[in-house]
Image 1: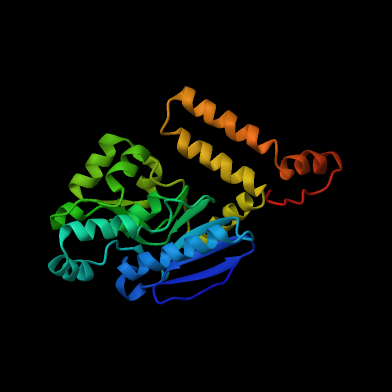
Image 2: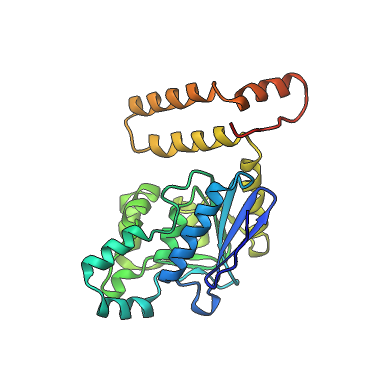
Length: 264
């Protein structure tokens, strides 16, 4: 995978894991329109690169994962752009995760506010530094979460807790975020990226097609009835039986050697 370094993000590769870091520390890694475009391009590149099996998303510096939407840019854009056009642009210019089909882990290294929390919520698992915190402050500015926050947060921590967090705008520290299920792991800041990359590498080391389809089954099945989810699982599992990797796995086990995955 090529590792471009645009102004707003950096991309580094550790084994089979791409680490995408939001890189506007002077602005608390606030998400500008340019950062949205750069993130989308980086995820598209990682999706197409067969040597990348998983992605870790983090923030540059040790103060902020992301302070959310760039309010300076938003104030200027809202004064110059019709609301209908802003809505269209927001739908078209997502963070690049909607169609990403490999495991994604967030490593929240500091403040996550508004859009920063929404970005973490799009990831499969969330690591947080013990100094990290989470907040939806939009209502304090006459706004509301508009990039999936109201929907993904409620599905993750339940309606009551989501309402309390969004409608008060209060800050949730890392230990509470762990207790309510907003994050899966809380670790010391010095260990954050290493721990997240290690778990991502563990996932990336397995059969690529099986990982993608199992992830697909869990995520899509969560929005279905149990019966429809079971049918989806059966269909995807049946397809996997036809792959070369499905033959390689048992063969390697019987021969007592590591499997050599072909990704097909």
